[in-house]
Length: 378
Image (cartoon, rainbow, N blue to C red; front, side, top):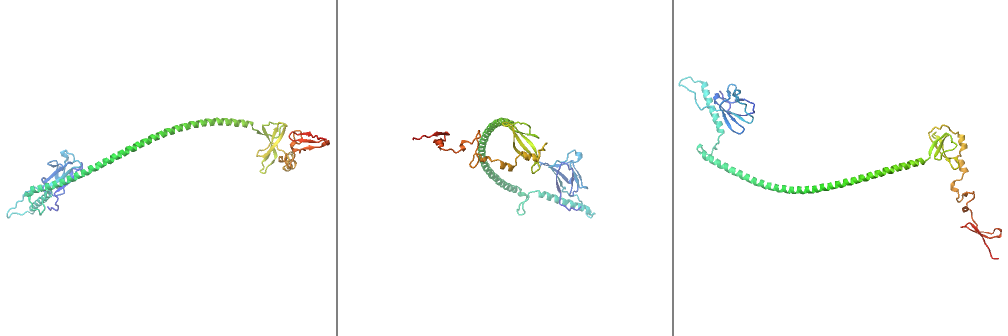
């Protein structure tokens, strides 16, 4: 055969399901294959049975179903390693037949030996080419290697010690910082507790003030309700005392002084609303007194004619020419007022301080309103 690859080993990671593994390197016999299993702890075991090798298909089955062993759990490793026996089975006779296939088989076996030795050499500790050491120097080499490893280990331990010292210092600093932080936190908690207590007192005081305010408000509301009842009653009493309008078509012979009587007219205002004249009954003189007029949109049941209204009421011009304003009564430049006897009051008459009527002299005392005879010595 032709050996186009130098591979003589393959390592597979198991998954808990796979049983069939690819044999991707050449092998002369199934007996030349070794199977190793390394568990999760790193312990490696040579498997001596429970597997099948198929050189033609290039597969290895492990574990077989017939073995009753479950597939390798995940996290383990399966290693396939070719180990060709270091023997030479080719026999050539003098002047015999030279079999090319047998020669190739012998060369293949030698090549496989070389590949397997190379695989082992790669896993060995080796000297540098210029060291001049041989296998006999292995003990001294291992001692030097041990010394080197020991020095490296001591250096690592010193570094670890230094790191530990640094960590201790950092830890001490952290503990100091934490202690200070705890102290600060404790002080803040005490301050917060005081604030909470103060706030609780303020809330209690506020609640007390609110209750007092509620009580005061309730009292005020009660007083207001009482005052409102009294005001309503007073308003009701005043309403009872007020005059109400009675709408009539014509004035009756007499009326009630508590009421104002409204009589509709046949005239309208500028907006065509009827005019209503208001009357009040004068109980002293037993007469009707007109108190005013206004327009409304009420439809009167009976209306006075325009001529009746004109003959009954004075126009503004007639009133101005017929009556004097009250501002001129007992005023300078106005008219005198009369007393209950129809006479001009004394206060509006100019009095004389002396008189000689009938040859008798008299004087008038304004303060008493009397005359006094003046006697003279003859």
